[in-house]
Length: 342
View 1: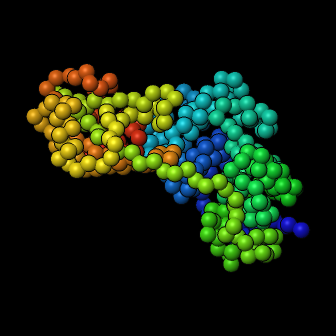
View 2: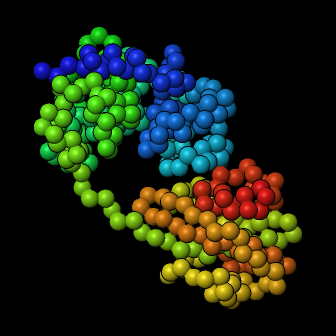
View 3: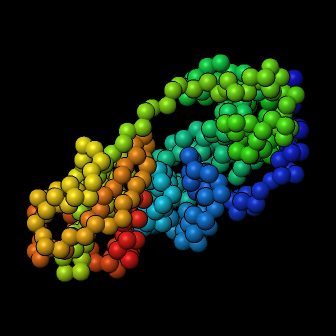
């Protein structure tokens, strides 16, 4: 018989002080849970605090422009989450009079809210008996039940969600729900610290010395390396930047123009490419930068190039140093702006 009582006691004794857990409103939970998707909680705290100062209510967020939201999100990654949050806020304000629903059926109608976020809002904001199953919880449940199916499959997630709903207590279910999330983050990690786990007696994988075998997952996609020659073009104190188009990876973010390279190159060959593509007498290499996104790892080779007239080789807009500060850049190109003293 699985009991989550030991988990609740453990959680209440070890609960970390996250700002969204102190008397959370539905809006606070909505913001925090979307930020927490694929991002560690300790990293989110700073962003969450800034966000709530800038957009303290869902109404203030709904009035924001996409560029303002993307700039505030800059550096947190997975930028589609920021756009989803903005869409959700506008829908709730314009269609629901600013009231975040307290039923799963209505929450799932809100753009940007999926099963996990809906479950989190119901559990943590409304303290209902609801399941918020993220990667941490999936890992805990797969070990508790020795679940032999691929947890990446939607049907598996639903099956484990149903099993969780069967064991969540009727009294204060949100405590057990938060406890499962914390357990996965702090103890039942990829390499679990089973000696600290309050659920040893309920965990089939622990009882069978098989925790390393769970969760069952498909092999990860192979990472693709990208090599990009970046043109940091300056004309009369302004720099040429390009906005990522709608539908593209990191849509809405700004970058400096670049071309793809087939492989890594030394500085001499890179410089030769620069002179062929953009004739200029003033070219200097900037420090290399890099960034990861989805299944890609990009190495950036930026060159600061001063030109005497506008060129038609790249589409983009010219921005002053002061204007660059207000633009949201992808992480690698954000580092390049730092090389320019922005």
